[in-house]
Length: 392
Image 1 (tube, rainbow, N blue to C red):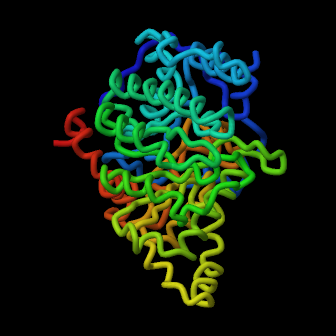
Image 2: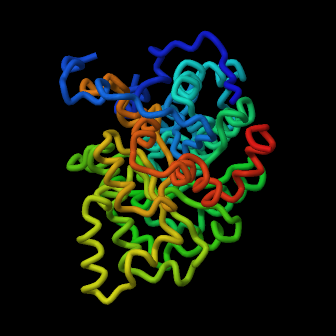
């Protein structure tokens, strides 16, 4: 793997804020390492040295100018004449490289991750802010920046797009931007927010015909979607610890109770964060499907996939024991939800590669999780890897 790293990116700049600092940015090793139960005290698992595709990466280290552009846009919501245009954002190539060099690229190299499917900051999509024009312009800015990252560092990043969703507005409004990103920018997938209202769930379920224009376009383009909410506007739901998990879990139940995949048999959707509560309550969903005379959960496994953004070994072990290995895609969401060091292991919570390496999987299944499944779920991805020289 070739890692393209430019020097000089400081980790303390505003563009490197974690999710919880995003809105603030718009507005202006612990004890216990020696514990007997510590994973770090156990034998290290063999490190997987083959291809590793992180299917869940976000641009959480945006250049300061991009955050300033968004602040201007949000400040002008009640005075559209003052809103900036996408063309107003000016960021140099050196600034783009510097924004990821000391975080994502450094961690990819240290952890043995070949490349990441890279999308705009999930918490920053902010679909509940402003109107459809606000969302479209912000999506264009965000997706164009992802394209620049992927174009400058094609061995490390492949683009996944943000959609210009707005509460109450048909997802058909998203199809032109999706098509632009796939056909013109070379993106391989998209993020779909099941709740553009930010925690109030004002739009119909994903199985409703309201969503069909988007599903039709995704099938036409042969791209999958990651079902990923954005920031929470409801103070009952902290974003990454509650709203995100709520979204994951709710989406799965919508699939269980609907015939969506009868209408779209080739549609592929990834539920992030290990599926929220789904693996832990697999028996509940099996029983509910049975009681409601729905097909067994296995009927969903040609269309629904899960990632490994689960930040402890027992969680990964449960996920891989419950969900078929063909339906699990490696992911870390770095730099994202949890950036700290686990005092019980001495390793970063989001170093999920270690968990998959330590899991009870055959070498063949481990290779599927690390790369093979992503190549299947994202059919446009193999050509990107060949073009970057990562595979023959």
